[in-house]
Length: 338
Image (cartoon, rainbow, N blue to C red):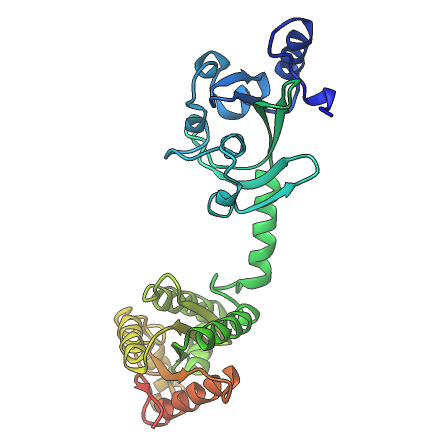
């Protein structure tokens, strides 16, 4: 039996006029497509949300332009085309309610006319005629941008290092576990770099904690600049950084490590203030106790051909041992497992 709340008399008359008037004045953004995907209702709230007037939309199939830069179906279009299998490709999250045939989905929308992306939740509901044929689809929209931005901010607090903006240790541990599982399933190598700032304690003593923080931020930017889209760089702790390189051989990891080393050295960050050496000589302190004149890093690299016989913690231990060797051999260098 057709629900009266979803029935529009396609032959016209008071029922249809009342439905149109009600939808037009609702505070919730709503648009309605007929069976040919043409807009038959574009209410005032939808005008405010999209910046596009009903006069520009009614009778057209150009409604997608109000939400996206490139052509793609809205949730109402998906329902009209009976193509719910496409929802995974189109929306961040979605659900279907078999009992009512409704669809619900959420995604970021470009909103070209207003020039600002919005995170919208959409509900699509079918409208049937007296014979049970689909005659139109109502799409109702909710602007969840502020809620989504707050959620993203909270997620970043939980997974990002407050000083450098890199992934934090918790995020590193979770990602390493996930990449280990993926690499084992795909039978691919997984590489790890451990990056440590040379003589950082002496640097902090000479420049103060604010200077040390600034140094770490610059090095974090340098390391991140060498990453691929699927790599992860994290602040592992203190002055140490960790880099996860999925599907990367040891040779490839060594190349990335050397690029990082060179980029940090190329920053030409003074290890101490220009007059620090003179002041320490006057104080009778040996300049040998001061850090080198430029900030550098030492890097340990390791790669695992992932299997059930090994663990992610072993990969960390091997990379740590390689880092220790790089330090022992004189710093400002990379080291790999022997």
